[in-house]
Image (cartoon, rainbow, N blue to C red; front, side, top):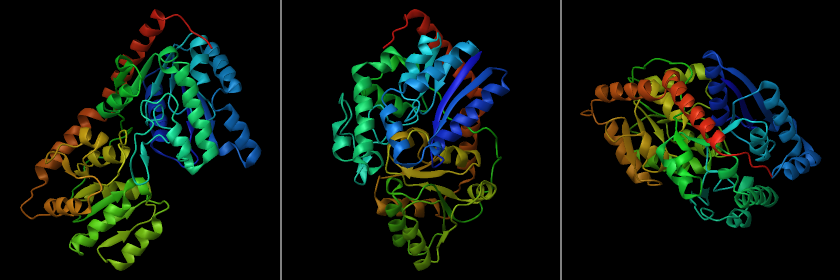
Length: 397
């Protein structure tokens, strides 16, 4: 199959960048003819570049022309978008269809319903923009990168393309990593019959770990939406009884460093390299995932499952789909440090035998999050997109 994959990468590398790279390599390894159309946020600097990019966010004519040319040259059957914000813009969807391809977009986040993308504001889940044609609450609260201007640009972009019905006119199929984000984005107005569930995956199997390290692991960004405050408050309640290793960087790093200095049971590892994380995740008795957002499908959890390590996570969003209580991990009440401390203590109870759970966790990974099954699902989505494309005449701006 002839495929073009589009992605606008982030200044600070994230899970979407990794998924884009893994899917690209998987498609190539399966013999597909794959080209890429990539824009880099690291390419623009200074006020002039920012203004130029901002003006092009709703409709970037240059990016659209470049993509249309690439699709025609490669005679691509599918154009698969990951992140389009800000330099590709939704104009890319129309350009791809104009050139004759079917269009697929992966829903890595909740951007079509929330300019910030994560449905989170002021320390809690926020759905104020859900169902609104123009997401004015996000503009009023400067949700996008805490910038009034940036929020206006992204909010206007979403409002324009809601008015243009871009998600129904210009995109043939959507990929959702899990059931929760599919349901949420269907309620936001994306046609549910065009959203197909295809989980993320790991490109390489790291093999199972032992789980005999006697500690809990936290791996992730140290930022408010990850509820680092809940994590640290729970360890205060545990009063040094259970070791915690933390790896990650972010604006709340000083809080973590202060907690580690005060509490000998907390060890801050900084930004641990990948080769070290393999062992850390595999030796951990459990991973604690305290995020206070709905998430989509965190790669951290998949990486932990690959090691056979169970996960303790808030009972919300994608984590409800990913984690089965007392089978692949445990849930705690969101933002509740007391409940988190209770669940961690339960996981460390001497009578809690984790060997059967580790086997179940590992089996879940092998069944759902490896390249082989993922490629089969991708082909099913691509075929559905092509069928939809041929049954719906091209509509242009």
